[in-house]
Length: 330
Ligand code: MEV
Image (cartoon, rainbow, N blue to C red; front, side, top):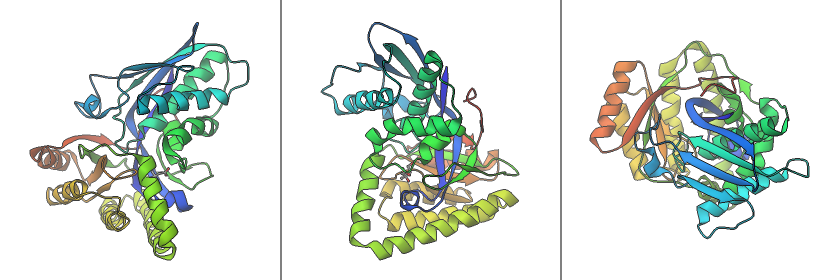
């Protein structure tokens, strides 16, 4: 069995593509994969009906219950991306590769900013490794799984894969191993879905176009995001959750300025703050998908979830950063 964690980016998405640090945390939900020898090489994704994240996450999931054969191209774009990602991952293994059937159960909605694609890739890598007797640590698993991630995301920083493989709360710089951080208490977050599916690839490309045009403006913005990450690390290490919430709010202003927020994400963040969240921001690539709201306790999380649900948004509460270092807990 191979496990990959879902993730939330607490601070610093997009800047991390341009060499700045970001802070991310694993979710207690993710993907589980198993592989067996077979006559033909195939992949099947089973999106769990009884989701541990959103109650109807399947609604958001484009990669729902599909079985694909690696040597048969598909007409449906999403399926073809998945098939090509699987083929790219298999290509990283020593030849000749035996035929295998891979099954992955996903608790995560796709296109939500929760790292579904990286969690699938990491779970797949671990399941294939285990079938053919390869042993590697989480950094090596994350690196191997990037072949898959590049098909889905074009120019990924690697943060999603690193957190999917290692779990916990960490600072990430592109090209370096995760710097795990010690928190007094794992942050409690409400995770709300805007109901809009988003493509991380498209959002990263959109930012790249703006970066090419307005380089100095965006570089300054990324520097400010990096500063928030450095302060955020200290806030988490010292248990200053009020301070951390303020940094999240500031990051959301910068993400909006970067044009990766949406009216729905803005509404959700505002509503969450009014209902008592200490801070709120989008998480992941933006353009839809999810937002996160930091809350002080269970009562506050209930208030924030109620306020979001009243407006028709789905939400769940999770302590983020669970499962650090574990390949078997998700
Ligand atoms: C996606 O979870 C985070 C982004 O910064 C893209 C990346 O780092 O690959 C938007």
